[in-house]
Amino acid sequence: MTRFETKLYAMKRFFILHLILTLFTISPSKSQQVAWEKWFWPNPGLPRNAQSPLFQDSLSLRSLEIKQPLPVSPRINQRLSAQYQLPTDSIDAKSASLSLEFWLLQHINQPIGFEVFLGKTSLLGHWNEKWHLKTQEVQQQFWEEYFTHLVLTLENGTVTVWENGKKISQESISSASGKLLLQSYLQEEPQMKLDHWVKHLSYFDKALSEKQIQQRFEDHQHWKNGGLRFPNTFHFLAEPYLFPLDNTGMQITFELDRQAQVSLSYGMTLPLSNSIELQAKKENLYSAQIQDLQPGTAYFYQLSAKDSAGKILNTGTLTFRTAPLASQPIVFGVVSDTEARPQINEKIGSLLWDERVDFTIHLGDLTDGGQKKQKWQWSQEFFPGSSALYSRIPNLPVPGNGEGDLHWFNYYHPQSEEKGYYKVNYGLGDFFILDSNQPKDLQEGGSQYLWLQNALQKSNAPWKIVLMHHAPYSADEDDYGNTWKGTSTYGDRRFQDLVGLLEKEGVKVFFFGHLHTYMRTFPIWEDQVKTSKGITYFQLGGMGGNLEDFAPNRVPFSAKTYRGHHYGTVTLTKEVFELRTYTLDGNLIDYHQLQYQAPDKTP
Picture 1 (cartoon, one colour):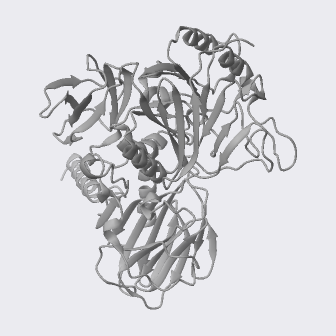
Picture 2: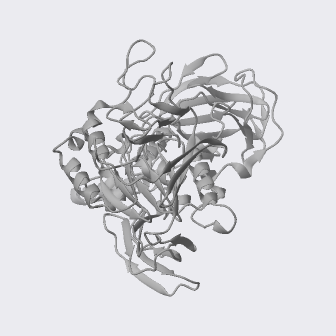
């Protein structure tokens, strides 16, 4: 064999060896096949005939729940909330090799916990941001504030716990056998289920290696950063939601996780008689404006999307009603600060659906901080919790500090025209939606101030209703000075120019959120209570954010306060404005009525 042939033979051997190694060296995330896994976005949608394939109760742990609780664990001395049995065979710890993976989204402020059992043996406990292990407690570490990747491996009778790709514990269990069970302790968050916390649960029939676990952690980071709910699955990032253009038009907006061919069908009866093809407005966001509809009329609509692989998404038949003529009474819902608890958003949405409100106003903080780098707060929290309602009932959103950079707010709400503020005429009311994230712009001479002044002066509606997020007046304990230690301004004084404008233009009703409590003021005129004239301020901030509290003494302008999650409904006729505010259980908190008065602009 010549030197050239020898060199060629060596190169062939190297190439073949390299090919073999390439074929058998699979990426860590795929080298161990998942035996069982499930993503959890629990939302049964609206009840009875309003059910839609958009919302699937199957995306919960409910099917795995069992009603035979274990004895109270010595690790977690808390009241049991629920217990779930995973769909695995019976396991013997001495011979088993397995991994259990969790992706946890912990976006609440009350202590919660869960525990993993093999039969009656506790493998790992959690309570109040601590891992409870056999011989120690370890403080939980979060990735990007709210997320934790947790892997528990069992091999040769040894349990190893990995948090965010790092080993934090390794313990032997002498003898344990049975099924894998999860037990939750959620009494401090009574509306919460374990699947509101555990977003992804995977079971492997082998113990994953450190490299594989780290790769799995990286995969979850990538999915979270993209706002995905299901990797490699054609799905909605934002289910369709409605906005009333006027009494003859409706805007329908939604987002997919990929490019697709999309059609929208609609009509007054089934089968649907009108169909249009839609093109994405931005990336994979679609926003269709249906015009030339009949005022105050019920319509059906349906969306169908097909991706490049031929996979199909279909919303099923949904409904909406156009705004009535300007002379007709209306009923609308009032909410704010959905923030971090989709389970509460969903419950209040169901209550508002039972009222069959014409539309809702949302007073801001749709998200807790859903700015440019935090898309997941929209696609993984706001839309899963709210769009069952908003797919059938239009919503007028207000930008809050939670979306203060307006990046995703403007992206998802074309009606704001990149400004964050806009006006809507609906029935007997003109609604002025403001962006209070820029308080200087709402001071005299600011562009938003001048826009509002002009819009108010042109309005002929009996009721002029102003909506923004921040608080001109507040009885809060510490947002405007710590009232347990000193004094407070009892509201954001930067909005006094705005208040003066509204008084001058005859506004009687002002809604805001921001503080996570309910407050109604007496009528206020020139910064003083004046029951014969002035503006009544309504603060409704209770749709999911962490609850706040009031100053220790009643603030003179405060007429009614309530601490707890809540929502409101308004009945509006030409003569009367009626606000009813309810608890999360539908109990009445407050009732207030205002009689229509012709605008009085005299000092």
